[in-house]
Image (tube, rainbow, N blue to C red; front, side, top):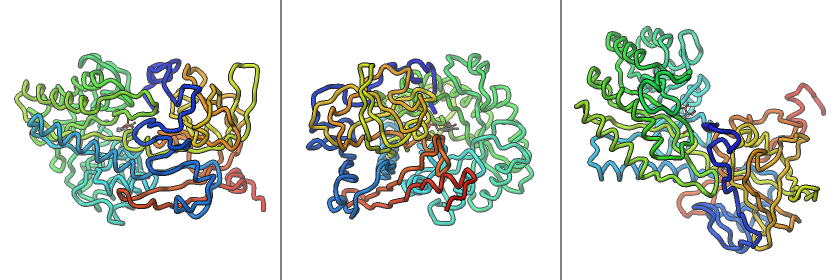
Length: 492
Ligand SMILES: Cc1ncc(COP(=O)(O)O)c(C=O)c1O
């Protein structure tokens, strides 16, 4: 799930992403990024000794037992941290620029729709963005349990033409939670709203996906999302004439995992012009929603200046709005990958090492890379891979192979030029894939029957408030019987 500009260069333009430790020398004590560090030869996720989950008896961690490999890690404090950081950044830059609008953080639930994730984003103050009928049921579930305060926006993106389950379900949601904003991207989505009997704030989605320099290029881009400029103007007039609809939000998304602040803001500039012109005719319009696309470190060489992005975004909005003599809008972002990527990790044991005629030995792990991280083989996407132990011993360059019989079940992904180094000592070696918490689980599916019928791993949900001790919730993995039952085998 990324803007795959060139699959041969790793999808995101990086042909040599830094995915781990790239040296033969041991690295017993080192900070790899702001949540992964080695201490005395073991890898820590913040304060959690990851190898200890398998190798210790659980006294130290408070788990009270060692865990089986492979193991999925769901680390909720990082979700809260991401939301807190972005809110703080916008608040600072708004203050610095004297920007007269507000910022609304929304979580794009398609990145990861797990219950603990949605509960955490809502508890951390995020608004909610959705794209399907099941998302409505999730939102109602959260609302009933008190996690969705009345003032939170629920943004309904995705296709919802008349007669679809999603269109109908949005009306159920509206009855329970007034602050719902359907974002219309086709005229076929109007009838259910107009005939609903509810007064609706609505949004309009611009056909803006892609990398364009001006309005003409944007309109001519081949994208199935949203309305072109003409369509937006007509839809806005239609909304004005409908007694129960109120145009509140303008939505323009230009891509995903965009790694250049300049490009990001310049691709958003044509939509800003349309926003300002619309605002002249429709004073009810108050929110500019730039959709998703904000990147997150998925490798160790990530460079993106969030502050600079926010500053340029707001300065450009100020300039465009000045030009058209309209007030600046509130700004909304729908943060999917940014919110959830770093909270997920997947840990494996190296079950055997195997020399072969290539220069680099195979390290074979007790799970599947392909079905755990589909973007790695489908889009040649890179993730961080580090050993959990033996970091105080020499490293060598290796290739990782999964337990399936598939020749694509390898890492680094086939076209990648990134070297992967792991400790020479493969005895009782554990490794982790990091920054895999967005999209991978949703694409690979949860609790299904996967490639080569490998059962799904155990999952450990980890949380804590500030520096309190960790709380753990362990969810059992699948047995072979579970996955066989899905395939029609009832083996007792
Ligand atoms: C409408 C919309 N909003 C937000 C997102 C989230 O994007 P990202 O994960 O890049 O933040 C997506 C992703 O496809 C999207 O389609």
